[in-house]
Length: 230
Image (cartoon, rainbow, N blue to C red):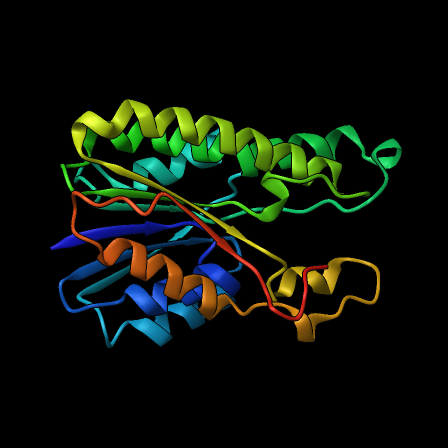
């Protein structure tokens, strides 16, 4: 039995990845904060996989991450998908300390703690997938907190990748352009969601990278829309 842990699986990219990776020999460990939405993800995948466990924790705090780790238990996992994230979109002069700390907690500290805890227990052939963003490579006005967090996770995960090579554990970084998820519902502005890529596009790329032979690493995947990025 393989065990896959996916954070931020309530909706969007996380749900699409869960649906894509569900299989009869897989136990899905699905994290989220929205119990109703996470239950909908469970309903979508439970008939296709061996087992589904729901993990309701707030990754903005170290205590929340520790509680998630404790609930996952001591059994090894074969895949960790760091997908959960928050986006504060406003001028850097208006970002509050609480918003900054929440961004750091969810987008940087949680992936750090999860990788640090689970990687030593992962067998050869396992993978860590970090859902980053094109914002990990380029800065955008009013997205400073988000870009900061993605740049930080990019640098950290590159180092982790090098440390895990000898153990045959792949670290796969995915850089989607703007993706049509619910995150845009809470961001002011008239965003051209029709031009955005879909969560299923991201999930398909992740599944393809994981399907490569275990001695092949498709390490960096950038996904853009031919209609143009925003």
